[in-house]
Amino acid sequence: MNQEGQPAYKRILLKLSGEAFMGSQDYGVDPLVLDQVAQEVCDLSRLGVEVAVVIGGGNIFRGAGLAEGGMDRVTGDHMGMLATVINALALQDAIERNGHFCRVMSAIRINQVCEDYIRRRAVRHLEKGRIVVFAAGTGNPFFTTDSAASLRAIEIGAELMIKATKVDGVYDADPMKRSDARRFERLTFDEALERRLSVMDTTALVMCRDNNLPLRVMNMFAKGDLMRLVMGEPVGTLVERNPQ
Image (cartoon, rainbow, N blue to C red):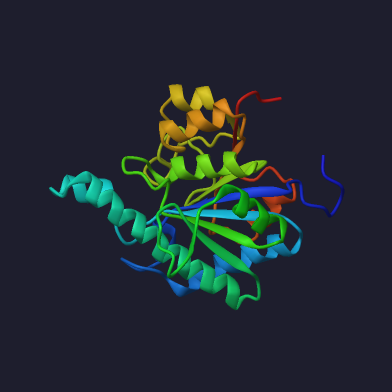
């Protein structure tokens, strides 16, 4: 239980999809969405919450999709990793324009534009109050940015991983297509895996389960919900290993 007016979590990892950055556009980055995300992340950091972020690259390139079109999968995934670096640099710029320190750390070496990912250095940045954006996934093909988010959250000792989506939690059916879709307040990882719910990919869920890392799925576009969640309110759907 958090003290009144105090954040419920000391260190979190926020997973953002690349598609979320498109906003109302068909491709690329919507500056309005970028600024909203940056403001909300900076607000958390100013409260003393240590914030790490993992971003996808689907608004620019998606490796699996390129592979379906005939491209070599490894090449496609490498292109997808570079797309996440573009998004990470865009978010870093927006965060710094909001008056906060930010570091981008890449799983692939690209020293001219960002730091290499080193776990101890990442933790030190967080301890100093800097927002850290992890780019380039795990640095390996065939792994999604969901898996990268789970891996980084575990490595840095995050207390909670937050997956920000376009819907307000996990449903038993697509709420965009089914008006009778039911939203879950909480789930176990095993339930999510057995029911094949669209939470995260299997590798990411198993990593969270085996390392007892709770996950919250929420709507990033509901203004103020991220802050309410971190302050301890039951926003979205909680996925955990052993529900109370």
